[in-house]
Length: 301
Image (cartoon, rainbow, N blue to C red; front, side, top):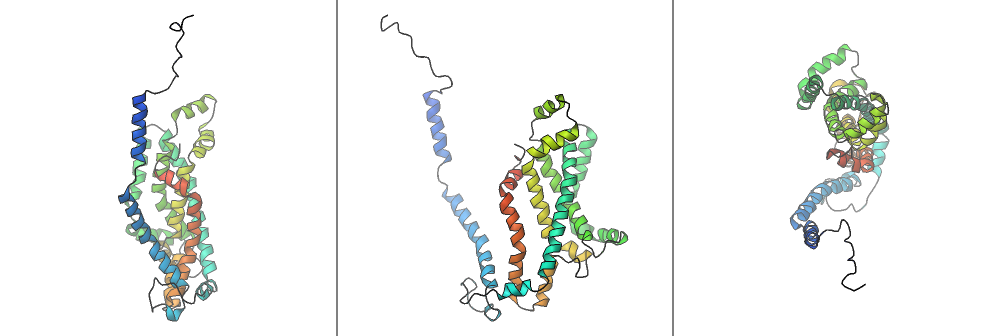
């Protein structure tokens, strides 16, 4: 067999032409190009966020007589933990327990109601479900300050005034609209073919909810957990209006009362703020990736 009649090697399937490879390399080079403006902006934002935190931490380790003198950004010459001991020896543990109970209860209520509501809004294809969903989302536009007086009357009539339930129920109600909105966006990312495959296997809607929807919606659920927990942890208006005694008092109201309890003891006040922020910050560190993916609307993928 002559050299001219030898069979030519077959082209590798899927190998792009040379001009496509060069274009792909140019796109990759462009995407990896440095962006000094974005880097400078990120650095400025990082400084804006970290400087107050550093000043607060430094002041919490300073003695009371040195708190209002000198440079607030200068590290304390004689750091002390007396301010933290002062806070811990007060009723801080009681306030922390009440706040944790309120946060866990709000998260449980929001998840127990918002997941089925979002599932029905996504899976039910009729005019009434869409209208009910839009009406439900009107709660996003209603501020809590606008309805605090009717809420006070309702809570008083129900006999819930000056109790943790008076804080938990309104907080969960105002966290529901945003939570349902996030979960609806997450559940819409789940492929319709998956539901059809489970339906062909004879799965009921309840089984689809627990075996398909919830496992694939972990990003959105994590977002709702952190959002509702933050609403309960940082809530100040409802504890101020709906509680009176020390029994159901939570951290935000307790820290507010520290101003008069400690007088001008600024280091002790800042120590209480730092201690109150540690638990919710730890929760954020654990679920930050799921939180970001849920907020971007790709939690179901």
